[in-house]
Image (cartoon, rainbow, N blue to C red):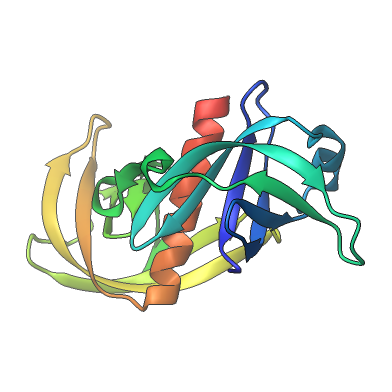
Length: 202
């Protein structure tokens, strides 16, 4: 109940967000997509993929639209998958996405090369004094596509690796997050999940 999900039409590149409203014996009721342009595409018999995050993993299953309810609050009925029809897509610790997010550290502003819920890789000038084993803290700016806001996430991590960049006078710094609350961790996971889906559909 109240599980955030991503709906993907199997016969097109259309996708949108929704939420689980009710779970019944043989069907699941989901809310009207947040992107109202999608409502007219979810007709009876439409094949869809449903993606969701739980227990630090991403899952997906194939299903189809049964019908739209006529209640005061309209919902879509979809076929409930059997347990063996739910696929675990990828564990979160390996769920690393190439991305270009702002990261503030001290008086500097850097940009990430990739990120996951467990850590990130960012690029900086070679002159910035950093060493493997250092603990650093800063602010990571993570956009949310649903409500068009940018989350300011305070991160604390340990430098695990420093590599020379392919660009002269720069280096790449790998950080493992050591302190982060679960809510912020899920924001990063959700961001990576949405980016992965967008990349696959593009």
